[in-house]
Length: 343
Image 1 (cartoon, helix red, strand yellow):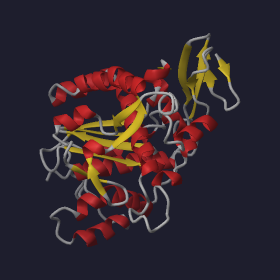
Image 2: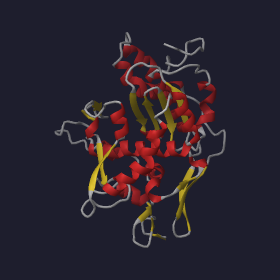
Image 3: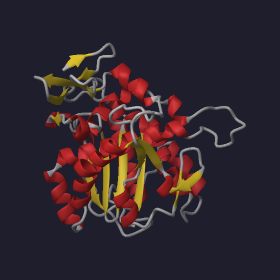
Image 4: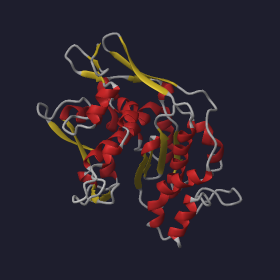
């Protein structure tokens, strides 16, 4: 393999095995190229990759239901797609989506057990979902009213900061192995049978994602090398039952805030071993390098994560409770005496 002018690793045929940072930023800004291999739609057959995987849309009958976009506009889940080349779409299906969908076929306990046995597959799938959500935002206007020239949501993202997540997401195509130390903090939990059986969200600035898949909830930090886990484990240890959807969103916000508090960031890179093998590696931060918690700052993040569910719930005085959340005065996980909230 050779390193080109943009720092990408290319093979003898000129195909990109690994995108350098500059090359990825260029790719992320170009909607006419496959987000996986980088091929242009002018000479490769393209089709549509569902942002939310098709197996989830089928499982929860979501194709004809509406998703609310970050700008408040609604569109059909079935049309919430990214264009990519047909070859890469097939590879993602065979090597990522099909295997992870089979893991979710069992009951909750067996699914959690199997996910813990396959942490790399889960991490790769979460990275893929996260990067697709953000790449889709290249097509979504900040204001759906075309008369307001505010541009696309994707234009405000720090694409350089998403380079590592993209490298992991496309490992099915590049063939790169992912070192265990690269994996992020992931929280798995049983969910109460309330509200919608499917939910997802992201806290973009902090590379954190949450997904509810029926009775199972997942919240994960994708770029911390697992160092947020010890920072929040004591606080989350009081959870003694299944979670509601809004509680899962609070957990995700607390993980995201823990990621914000990391003073020293992990370092990620991809290296080549000979002519064909790639490895995604990391240098984790030193342990115990978290900053102090600012209660109001944490409250603002929890309010951002939970606000939409709160305001659309039947909670009395929801707007006042949102303001209390923003001030860090209330939360959804524990009562004032520290016991877990079960209803």
